[in-house]
Length: 584
Image 1 (cartoon, one colour):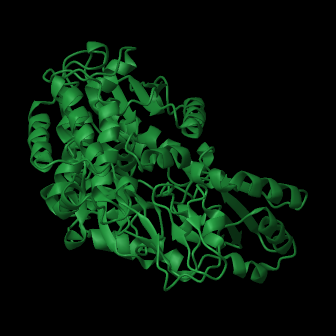
Image 2 (cartoon, one colour):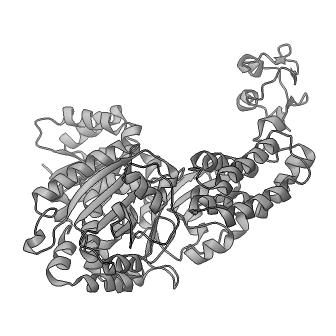
Image 3 (cartoon, rainbow, N blue to C red):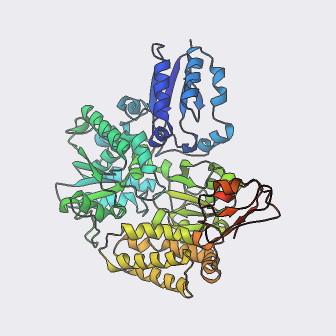
């Protein structure tokens, strides 16, 4: 009998797709066979979940879209040593290309090792970098290695990591804090969640190295309360690392000691700003404060503190093991190493993507992502979440680095990449993000509190068909005022979705305001439905499906829609097989 190992992907996306039920079936059917059914985290191919990896004498069979029924067949085939029978469930060559085009550093273990086993992490080379650092390197040598790597903060700002570490290291005081920002708040972003769920020890090791470099004896992970699985696995990993001696007193027999705690945040988007995060950690309302002093001088409990996000820390152990120069060899002159993106929206292959900086948006969206769903026309990609902007088709060959993306009006952000097609209304997209930022504003400064609300109101009346002449210019004026007057990054970047959609899609704003039409046919108040009598066959299906009873007509005769009764749900257009329903 072949030596067989089975692993079931158990990230949140896999579990939501039914991976828990699949594992239960495999456990039951293979009980007593001697074949262990283990778990791994998220490999990043969300559109193929649930995923089951079967290793036959070391040869991988990656099985995708597995359900309870196919799990029974898989178990029977494995028990019978009939691995040829697995072929109908195996990943296609095209889908496999999704991973083959990536370079994984932060995600190097995700979907490969058991996230709940410290032994699995150690077998993958885990904690070797920590041992090297605390037993053979000085604090300054660690900081210098990070400087050589060119690693910049992956939380959005792209600030040099070594500079923040060095500032905290040089600050006076015996008590210092190392803080991880895992409060991932961008709509469509799930990079940090995937790392914590799939490889929590990578985060812990990276944080321990940073704590050593700045002289911190306490490390805190501030994580979203909406990430329950990530919190459970991180707690387990911390307990394992503590038992193994990687956390606590005299790590590797040295003078370096460090303890870990977890704080589940309330989910406020503004807590992505480091001073607001610190306020929340201290039990206060999450609101930013003026800088200086910077957290490196006065941070958590007024002590020197350093804050980086999950992805930043996830690169650290690899850099120590492989050298800063190896990391710097990837990427561009302005942006070194790799970056993780959450590829979502109207994309064929959505999931987690890690690429070297320097690739283009086209490489990611049409290469790795496989292009637009249903082969529709690409329209734009939203980069940087509510703080970012929309990049149009004519800029698809923009190089992915901090400088080039900023030149478009968008930002790198934490790595959200939301793809839009021809059916997306760009005015509606701007309104969506302004709704978000207006609600998430902490309210401390007038420009953000009032300015985002006024922009939201203007965008709302435009998409409702009540736009006025001069609204575009008023939006631009408000955007300028909010950017210049807001206290923190939330307010300073909130206008970006509005400014970029006006810049690249001004014609859509004008159509909404002047013609009372939505070119994308998405704004319900600006569209109407009618039936083309020449195409209608009188099948009555549209009338049967209409929830408002707005469609009338006899069998085999053209039907009509009463515009006064129609609620514009679109059911008629969806069910019509003859293309008779027109949307204007």
